[in-house]
Amino acid sequence: MTRVLVVYASERGGTAEIAGWIGAGLSGSGLEPDVRPAGSTKTVEGYDAVVLGGALYAGRWHREARRFARRFSGELAARPLWLFSSGPLDHTAEAKTVGPVPGVARLGRKLGARDHATFGGRLAPDARGFLASKIAKRASGDYRDRDRVRAWADEIARELRTVGT
Ligand SMILES: Cc1cc2nc3c(=O)[nH]c(=O)nc-3n(C[C@H](O)[C@H](O)[C@H](O)COP(=O)(O)O)c2cc1C
Image (cartoon, rainbow, N blue to C red; front, side, top):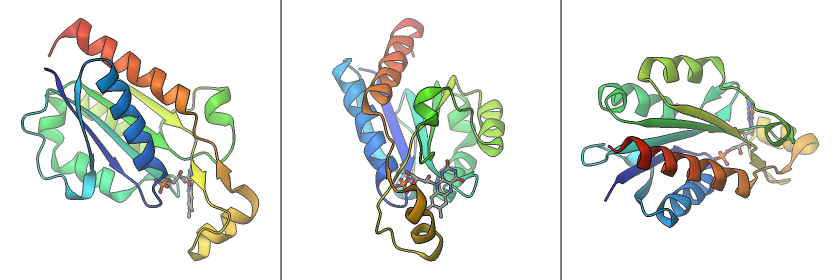
């Protein structure tokens, strides 16, 4: 069995749900995923591959995703690794390929990530917080595309089958 750690950093739950969809896709392809929050994941031992994702806040990955990447950089660089971000509160991530923000692009290069995907985000109209409530006035909604997430998980599964681990 190929064990895959799907690890995420999420503030309001939208990215956590995307990680769950990825996990479901991988398990449908016969892999063995564990979906876990970055903040409380203490090891990557025992996993053959890792998918690491973070919500985007102010042009950066959620700090727990950044911290996780820093803390386990050696282990991540030694495994097949995929990265994803969730953020745009519009349809841009569906209409075209949105590249990683600069910090995530740097991490991807440093860790030798195989791919990065940007998925749309979600913000509730009644989101709490000074900035979040302001943003929600003009850009609330759910822009996550479950089929696209699922297709990306299928690609990961295909690649893992091809390369072996
Ligand atoms: C204060 C704030 C700042 C944000 N900054 C960005 C950003 O820089 N880029 C982006 O694409 N999305 C940004 N977003 C949208 C979030 O990434 C989106 O709501 C995402 O789905 C949040 O994920 P979560 O529910 O897992 O926390 C921002 C949202 C808030 C509330």
